[in-house]
Length: 428
Image 1 (tube, one colour):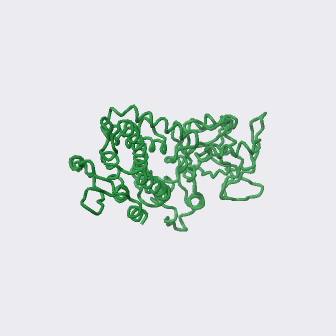
Image 2 (tube, rainbow, N blue to C red):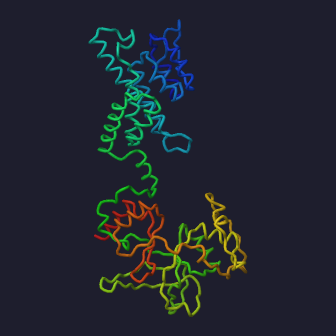
Image 3 (cartoon, rainbow, N blue to C red):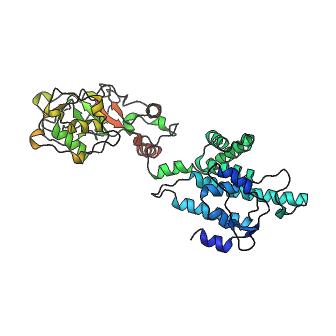
C-alpha cells in the first residue's frame, strides 16, 4: 500500500524519449533490466513514480543509473521521502534486511534530483526542451552514481574502502575523483553532527565495542578504579558442586583460578563469592584489607594462605570438563579436539546432569587453565589497559596487587566511555 497507492495517485506519465531496449539487453546480461511501468495509451509514456517504487530496489538503482528518460521532480521527491522513512522505520527489526542497498537507492534518487536541476539549467542556457532528452555531453545517471556514493558514505562513514567498492562495481574509473570528494564531504558533514548510524546502533544495544583511541581523561583512572570487585574464584583443585553452582549462578565467561583463598575462620561463613567490595588501599604500604571468604568448607591447611593468582579458565572449558565427567577418572586429560568439539554453539549449564554422589569429587583445573593470561597491576593507568584490550583483542584482564594476589577482573564493558565517565564522576 505504501508504494502502490502513491504510484497510482501521484505518479506522472513521462514521455519515453529514448529507446532503452539496447540498454536493457546489456543490463539483462548482468541479471537486471530496465522494466518501466507503462501508462494507459499508446505505450509512449511510463509512470515514473511507479517505475521507482514498484520495481525491486536493485532494479530501481539500475533505472536511476541507466534510464535516460525524464523522471519528474515531484516523483523523485515522493520516492525519496517514502523510501527514506521506510528504511528508517524498518532498520533494526528482526527481518533479513539491511541498509546498504536502500542507502544506494535513496542516494541515487536525490542524486537524480540534483541532475534534474543541472539538466534544467542546461536546457535554459542551450535552449533545448527537457522532453528532447539530455543535452549533448550531459549524462544524468552520473549524478545518481555520485549521490548514491555520498548518501551511503554519510550513513556508514566509510571513505576509501567504499570508493573502491563503488568503482569496482561500476567500472567507472573516471569518476573516482568526484566519488571520493562526495564521500569525504559527506563524512565530514556527518561527523560534525553525530556518529555514524552503525555506531549509534551499537551504543543503543549497549555492545562493549572499544573505539581505537581511549576516551578523554582515561589517564586519570587506574585499573583498581574500573575493575569488577565481586570476584568469583576457583581453586586449582575444585569440587564439582562448587563449579556447577558457579556456572549456574554466574554468567561470566572467564574465572580466576587461585592457589588457596583466605578462609574466614572466625565466622565459618561459606558464601559463593570472594567478596572484596570493601577493599581499602594504602598509599604507603600498597597493602589491602578485606573480609575474604571462600565458597565451601576448606581444610585447616587452607587457612591464612593468600589468594595467590594461578591462572584463568573459561566457562566453555568448565562446561566441557563437567560434560565429559573427568572427575570419574582423575588421570584422564581431555585433548584439544575434545575441548573444542562443541564450538561455536557451546554447552549449556542448564542441561548438565550431575549425580549427587559425584558432587563432592574434585577436578584438577591446572591442565586446562591458562597459567599466563594478560594481567595488570592495580595502579596501571587505564589508558594502558585500554590499549592492551584494543590491540590484543582481550575479553578479560586480571588485576593483581603488588604481591601477585588477584583483586579483580576487567572486561570490555568496564572500559566503554559511559562507564569510565561514571567512575570519574564518582571519584570526583
